[in-house]
Length: 232
Ligand code: C5P
Image 1 (cartoon, helix red, strand yellow):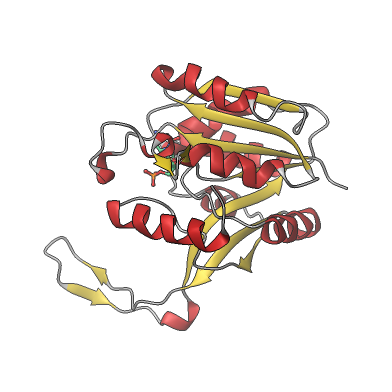
Image 2: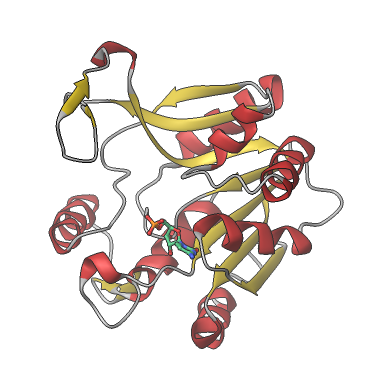
């Protein structure tokens, strides 16, 4: 069985939510979104290490949350995040243990990821290099110019919406990040960094419950999903 380290970027400001507290620390039925997310990974046998990247003001809070998982996960760490998501993830690499085979990156604000999808990504990443959870695009996507005039409409049947987890062989992901930093490339997900150095990344079809809690409406949906699952 591969040994998996999970990096959870949780250093965003939460500006789109309009709340004072950053999104990962908002409560869902009394428990922070971050804690729900960590729990989803702590249940998976492959997970040996969890590293949360957060802003300096939230380090103590994250340490308190991680205390709840002692004994369940071999190694639990927190690091200070950076300006962009990509910087927050890169900072976590310093904590990766030598015996780790695979690294998963998973947004702190996607608490509903299921065990089966994590395992399937691990198997595929071990075989080909990388695997990410994604869903087919349900809306038609438009490419526009600066004046919002449409330039083109890509064929929707080829388009997928990338989610997380995004799981990669350790050395491949580290090489991709080193190269991106050196060449000042900023991607909006981890796969894009691996793709640009020629790594193979496959899609694993996920489900729409794995939502990214971004706007106030998403919190309402998240409560409904939790209630349906009968969890606190
Ligand atoms: O805001 P965005 O959609 O990029 O957030 C995705 C995830 O990345 C969130 O879990 C957020 O906390 C995290 N993030 C981060 N460091 C940043 C920006 C976002 O860890 N500088």
